[in-house]
Image (cartoon, rainbow over all chains, first blue to last red; front, side, top):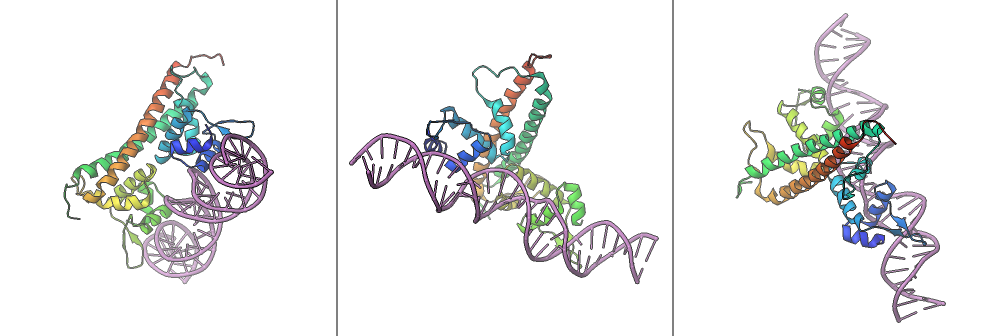
Length: 121
Length: 121
DNA sequence: ATTGACCCTCACGTCAACGTGAAGCCCTAG
DNA sequence: CTAGGGCTTCACGTTGACGTGAGGGTCAAT
């Protein structure tokens, strides 16, 4: 599909999609006339990108993360051992992010559950 | 305490602390000579601010949130009911992000554990 | 073959959350 | 009393994630 349809279906602007490509988050094919040609799966990819960006992750980190989120149906291709330290650092970074978000959510949940049904505010 | 100590103890820059005050997130007293005078509780407050900022919330939202998060020593103080829908949306957004990250980490862990000890790469 | 919707690539503008001096006051130690 | 560390208020600079045209090619339909 072309960029307009992806924009409508994913709910993000065309500019943002071009920016994501520029940052290496998307790699659409090109038609002979130079139009970007996106896959169906990119709708999901963009959804993930949005979610992670909204969670405060940078495009650089997301770019490293996305290959780990490819749904190949049957796990991922076996990697190269020399990448292991890098992958482990990535995993630890993700863990740290999850912890941050969990802390924030715990705070929010606490506020939500202690808010009285009808208020004196 | 003064701004330098709070900066050291909370791990954020003095500039950031002044910015937080400017945005209404902190309201320190002032000494006769004009120095900011922070409370002990502000260390915790700043940690919360950092956590929520890292989770993608804006200072404006955090400013509305903080009064609902006064640590009364026994959980949080009752908040404002009209903020509830907003808070719940934020919480759901964070939950979605946590799910994304958890999925990514699971995949990544799979890659790590299935990487052969010595490599053909 | 012209219109109109769609697409392209620059390239400058914007906004939040700070960073980074500059110029100067406060306060304790030597 | 003066040197130095900490504090103050401007005020401009930076970075990331886009917004917003400008100027121009593409293409199906009239």
